[in-house]
Length: 281
Image 1 (cartoon, helix red, strand yellow):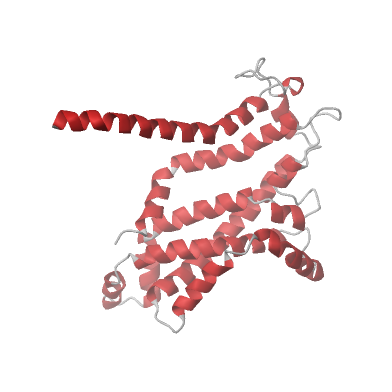
Image 2 (cartoon, rainbow, N blue to C red):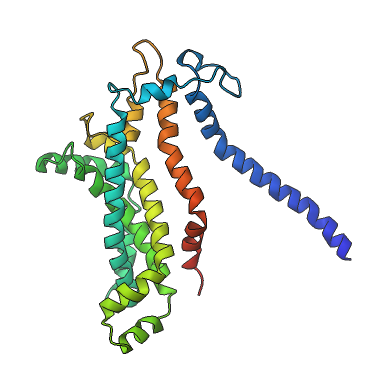
């Protein structure tokens, strides 16, 4: 009987691993081809070989040439994504803790309203935001990219952190207050350290979303010194005046993507722990 069950489970395992392999191939194939194209010579961009031959750094060199200004674009992306992440955590942690722990009228309505704001497609808000930012003089500024990104990131952050705080026992704060802490001190000294996995996960997700944001940065900024990396990639004209920009775009894509991949691989356990902790009682 045991042998029969073991034999029956073998095809199931094979199908499972085959499915995982197909999904992995589907996800990694575009990035692999981007990396291969980044290390081809500009004149070899339309080659179909699996590896670049010969290996060339011309595209990477062209990306960081002073005329392209890609280094400044990377700095702009870092500023926008970093500030968006910090503000999202400061506001999101406070709002999520209030929703999870405090009892007040219309609490469920407030939570539903926060989630409802994330249902609006970003493209539908561009015209009113563009008109508003033009009137107040925010075009070609960091805040014109940070504030919309913050409004899109906050609902998900509040939702994730609320679920995380709710699964933490209230006895933790009660014990801290018995020992002489105020509710604020109990939150800072007890709850926040224990909520670090959820906060860290939210920070990573928010940073990646803000780093990859394109449509807002494209619409709110027309100054080349203020554009983010994603916008700069879309506006590449090529390493030279007569070539196609595919090689430099692929090289810039690798530069933008690799740090995110490294961060996710290094902290994948914390990310998974933070995502699953809110669903466990």
